[in-house]
Image (tube, rainbow, N blue to C red; front, side, top):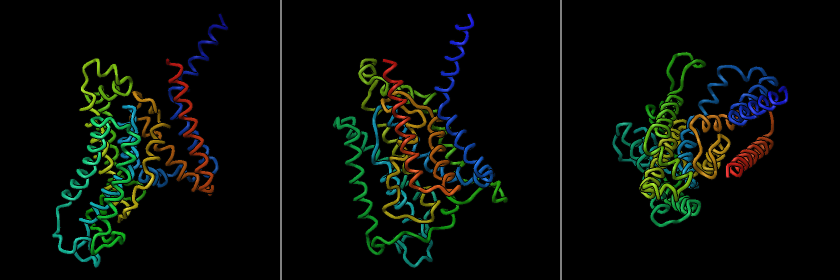
Length: 343
């Protein structure tokens, strides 16, 4: 009897660890760094980590849409760069000496932001059409758009009179979006960009869990053939999903330009790898059909803690890359093991 009880307890513990592994890793990372340097647990450090994670969260949530369908998106970073340049180019102060559009009148803040988000949505729409209608594998389809978008962004960035000069002199109302906060105390204030990321995460959670789109997204990723047989218009919903992802990348690009105070055509480079890594570490299955918003948030925070925390205690960036690589491989191996066991 005692042996049976011990076996049940062992299974319960194993199940708990498996279910909450990502959160356990995050807590262990924080505790480990804090033991080395207790200052890491200060409110200001937490605020900085959240600030740096905000745009990455929005990008990773966009990538999660596509990964859950069983696809992948390599154009993510280039869409971020394109939308950062578009928004920044239209939101410079009138007095700035090197305005991208010298004769552009003062536009309402929302107009360039909406234009940039629509630009991201359109690239996502193109991705969706190529994948759904032309039946090009997502890896190849988005690889092609990644290259094309970077080329288009570089041509735009190289237009006269800018000619590939970093875009600066952003309007205060735009910069405030990325650097401003609620509250007068710098340490305890809540950055606007963090609030935006939280709102986006809540909306995405609702889409994932409470809408037809979310239900069909998981069905497509779980078994696309069964989804077709059950009457789901797979092509239509794939186009919707890629378009939504593009819009989220667009919003992240706008916020990244506002946060950093400028933009170049190289913004967003390799962001797609960080987004995919955060999703995979956060429990989004590379085989499709599995993934949660809290898991994606935890995945982003893990990499933010690694980047910020290890730099904080003076560990070489090269070691950070090694640690991140090991975590990514371990997460994928764990995911594939669960997938094979479920078969």
